[in-house]
Length: 134
Image 1 (cartoon, rainbow, N blue to C red):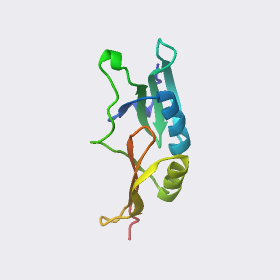
Image 2: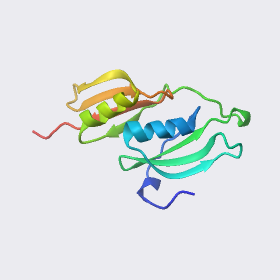
Image 3: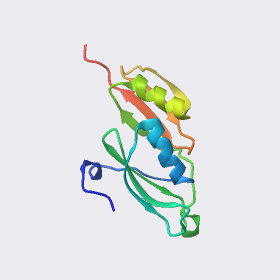
Image 4: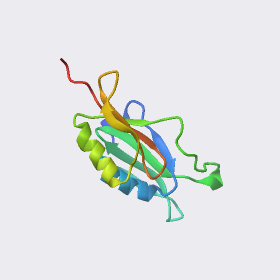
């Protein structure tokens, strides 16, 4: 299924959404995701498993399967954070693709430039550009 690479180490978020195929296409547009593996569900309509690489890290995505006790629950207690060098470019691409701005991308009290977004599948994301050394 997935290949052995650096995207299979550390903590890998695994998200379940309604409409995984649409979410995968959206993550390619919004965050430059690269598809590493895709397994369709037996029903031919949903995605059983997808392994993406975004900014050098892994993200796993699948559809929800309410008939197996895995119905959709909106994101409310976690945020997927991307630490990047050019925050403005990442931010602009995500917003242009259709992310909703929750907290504008700006210099925060801790010195980094940071902002929070919500994608059309109700997943929270943050863009973080580390403060430049003085």
